Each structure stands twice: as C-alpha cells, then as structure tokens.
Image (cartoon, rainbow, N blue to C red; front, side, top):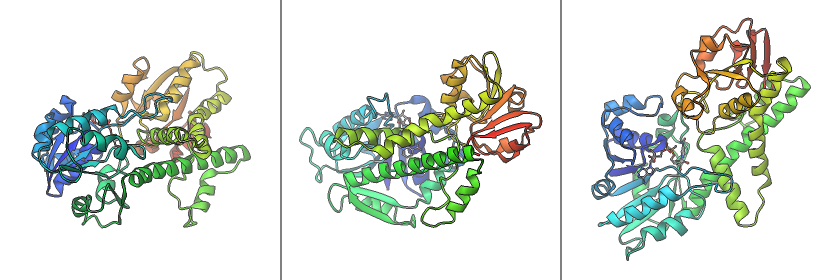
Length: 415
Ligand code: NAD
C-alpha cells in the first residue's frame, strides 16, 4: 500500500519504519526539517532500540511537503503530538487541527485519513471530520476517516507495534476501515471495529487503567513501607492471580512520559466538561504527583538539611531504554532538590541531552562520578545501574535496583 505518515516523532517514525519494512511504500512527513534530514540519512533523532537498524535496512522516503505525500499515497496516518499545555488546557489540538485543515486543501482523490494521535472521545467526529469536510468535500466520496489508536510503549516500540495485543479500528460507517483491516490482517491479534468515539475512548480508558494500577500499587507500597513489609513480595503474591496479573505492579516512583499523565489529565477534563467528577482518576493523578517527593522525604531522614549538599541522580528519562524526558519523575525530584538548596549531579545513559534543555544549570557526568556524591537517588531502572558499585554509599532507590542494596544506607521508596 502507499502510505503517508504525518508526524515523525516516537509514534510516526516507528509506524513508518515498521510499515515500510513490511513492504509498503511509506512517505514520512514532518515540519521539523532536522528530523526529515536525519531520516533521509537512515538515522533516527530519537533513541528507540532497533529503530536505526530498521531505518538502515529499509530506507523510508521523508519530506516536509505534505501535499506531495498526500497526493502520492492513498492512506495518511496522523501521528502529530497532542500535548498538554497547562492544567486548565489539558490537551492542545492545534497541531492536529491545523494539519487536518491543510490536508483538506490537498485532497483531490479519495483518501483514507487515519487518526493515530490520541484525541479525546468525540474529537474526530465533531472537530476533525467537519474540518476535512469543509469546502464541499464529502465524507465517503472524497475521503474517509478512521481512528486507530496506538498502544506502543517507548523502549519496546518496534516490538509493540509489530506484535500488538489488539488493533482498534474506529470508523464513521461500516466499511471505512476495510483497508486498515487488510493492512493489519497478518498482525495475528484481535481486530476490534467500532465507531470513532469508542475507539478514542478505548485508548483513554486503557491508559487510565494502567495509570490507576501504578498509583494503586504505589499506595499499597507506601503502606507497606510504613508497616515494614516488602511491597514487591506483596505484588508477586498478587500477580499470580490471573484476574490481577503481575504487569504494572512495580511500586516505585510513579508514571511519567508523554502519554499516561497527559491522557489522564485530558480524560479528567473531558469528564468534568460533561459534569462528571472522575474521583478515581483524580486520586490516581494526585498520588502520582506526590510519589517522587517521597524520595526527598526519605533522603532527609539521612541528610536533614540538603542545603549545599551534593546529591547524585541516576536516571533522568521517564523510563529505561528511551531518551524521552517528558513528565519524567526526575523533573519533580530535581526541582525539589534545587528548591532545598542542594547541588545536583546527574547521569542517564540516553537522556542527558534532553534533560539538559530543561535544567541547564545542574552538573551532568558519568555514573561513576554520581556515585561520589553524598547521597544518590536512583530514578530509572536502567540495566547498567545493576552493575555499579554502591558499597559505602547512601542510596535512596525509586526503582528497586537489587545491586544498590549493598549500599551502607539503603532506602527503597516503597520497600
Ligand atoms: P512526538 O512529539 O514525538 O512527535 C510528533 C511529531 O509531529 C513531531 O516530530 C512534530 O514535529 C510533528 N508535527 C507537528 N505538527 C506537524 C504538522 N503539521 N505536520 C507534520 N508534522 C508535524 O509525539 P509522539 O510521542 O510520537 O506522539 C504522537 C501522538 O501519539 C500523540 O497524540 C500521543 O499521545 C500518541 N501516542 C504516543 C505514544 C508514545 O509512546 N510516545 C504512544 C501511543 C500514542
């Protein structure tokens, strides 16, 4: 199939590279010229395991020319960002609206527009479809629109894209998603077809559930810590129950990244907007905001004043195997440390450059140098942190790094 992918970020680049590797002709489009140039050289600007290899093996056409991409393909996957700006503005749909408007101008034969970006229930039907259908263009005759939410996780994005648990196809009317179903027919997973707003809601409900599971186990972990119980043993015992399952039961620092916090905030706002107060979702978010600060409280048990103390941070990304620092727990921890007057020295295998843009004033160095600080906070479970020498150190661990238990003073956030 001839496919354009609009937005070459974490989702778009992975989608494009994988669909090209499966034998489709793919044209990637982005407004960011550096990203485009880098794809043309067979390199990804983001760090995602396996992505550079697949881009080298299957060169993907890349351009900033939207009209060229749309004219030369029959399907466009919309993968632009839908970020949060502020609590009162939980989702910014400007990029996607502007793009859809522009796409509308370029359509001159029937085209399938597939919304992969995460948008609140009702957005495609009430906002995007009318924009695409302005100037006399008719849904069905000139274009069709589907919602195909993405569930990949950064750090294992290629595997998640190619081997999903399910594929959701939301369609305005039966038959609109037939081409998509054909595209995915060999993916070997259930394909659920539903209407547009149901597909959008499935994405939000899934992320809200995962976020709630994390905040739930963190709450259990906080109670366990106070009772002198190991939260990981508790989670292991719970996880054998098939109704619960062991995934997303790792108590610790909480969730971050570009999706869970943002999608939770957007769903909360959407619910409030229709007059429903979503209490579980609100508490999930609140617990998650507070969880990283427990690291500071634990640290202060051992260093009551942090003023002018040199504190080391291991891990800045929002999780291992990514360079993405959006809503990373490290942001809250570093802010809190600086507010207490501490001096911060930090290391991350992949996210140093991205974190430096947010906090240019702290010291960035190698892991061994971080270990020389007066106390060390572990914020990400990068594999290499299990191979450091923690003997004689003061360590507050937010991610259950087994080797760190050899420290002279060791505190786990929930154990
Ligand atoms: P991202 O910020 O990494 O990438 C978005 C890209 O879109 C950027 O490269 C940007 O330059 C480009 N862009 C913006 N406006 C454009 C335009 N008019 N034309 C062409 N390109 C444009 O975002 P992401 O993390 O890939 O997320 C994309 C969407 O997918 C979001 O809605 C997100 O919620 C959703 N999602 C993300 C993940 C994830 O793990 N990152 C997983 C599932 C779903």
